Image 1 (cartoon, rainbow, N blue to C red):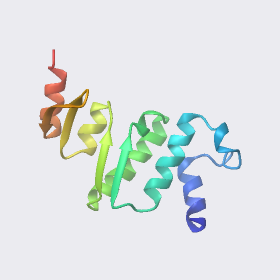
Image 2 (cartoon, helix red, strand yellow):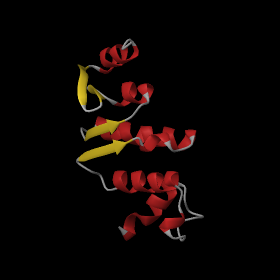
Image 3 (tube, helix red, strand yellow):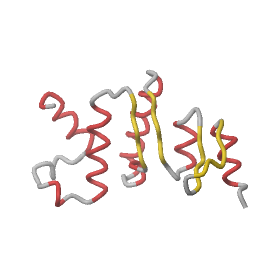
Length: 119
């Protein structure tokens, strides 16, 4: 982990706060650091739960590029999000859940359209 520390700090853009206690971080800062650590260790499976909703535009864009790189190398990803554009750009298959019930499953465009037309 020590070998990766500089890359983690650089990607997370938290260099001026990195020595502060974690309890002083905002939820967005914790999410940013957590995403950076989780994706810097080259996982076989990546679970991302709304983490990209807390960053600024540049960080979100950089994070989406990193996720696209994982996707291109065959890493399995589970993305939990309310961002339809992120779902469409990052996913090959989508499951729409509503209170734990599967409402639709399939290609992103089809499930997104079903979600939009739900009412």
